[in-house]
Image 1 (cartoon, helix red, strand yellow):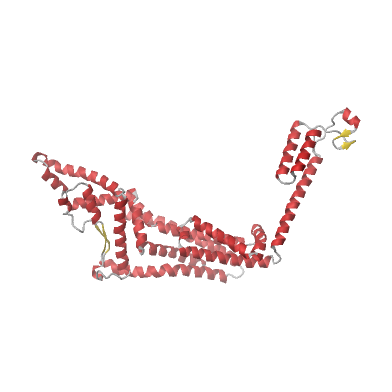
Image 2 (image 1 turned 180 degrees about the horizontal axis):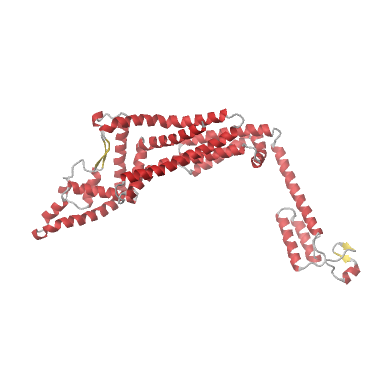
Length: 455
């Protein structure tokens, strides 16, 4: 079931991508705009538009007509030179927002017609005439105007100039069948994958946590396989379509941009598998996981609103961050929130069984005891350090008088400058850790400076 679920997950990723990319006019138009914004693709499009102008207007003949008789032989070379200039002008024009808006509109109209034909909802044409075109005639006319061609020549450009067939009548029936399948598969395959994974976990009695962790790795594997397949298939597609090296950059950019949504969906699946693995680890017997559950048990059991509130705050942070397109869509976000709520509920049941006596007040008392224990330990270590500090006789006069820093009869102590600095640093560290109060630090420091060692 895990293996079958992974295969279904890969197919589901492809089905969802195809459904969103091919059967959504807005996504199609947005992707087309992104294509035109790529320099390699824009160069190929500008070349195509200039070719359409030259194919429908006899530029060389018009130049020959306008030139004097002795200069007529130069019409051909002049037309060729003008072609290069025309492509540069067209390429710069395609960068303009108004031209890109016209390109986006043309692609949206073509997408709407394609979807209507693919779904069998086209009332304009019959099945024998179901040919969908991308109409770029307006751009061809615009390029002619930008090249300074007279209106008399521009009017000769036929209406079908720049018309690109998207799907023809012979392909219409096949496209309709594929479209119906995509609509269904984009819904059925993701649900089937979830059912297979859930059933695998449910059947794995006694090892469900390990199986859940494996499900997370299966999701990651499905995303990685999709990304690798995208790269391998993309190279084959580019090699088959790009007959020359000149158009290969445009073909590669087209594949990369056209499958960018597939890339995003695959990464969403990979990122989605990570919390599953973390959840399985958190429910496991590892010492760190048990320690985390023990620390969180009082709030999970006694204060569920705190647990759900923390989970909700984490979800809001991820949504606000939006690291993936899926985190900016309603349905994936709702699924994420539902799974997070189920995970918190399962964790609450587990810690309630493991730590039934856990209370918030008990946890707070335990923390206070730990802090006090840490303070006591530090004081003991300080006392041990004082006891092992090097002691040197201050001299015969001090010994004869029986006076010393420890009181009457104790030997005087002389501390070297280096030892004194080390003791001062130790006192400062203990004060920073909260072991010594401000008053205790001042007293110990004064005693050290006065007698050579802390009290």
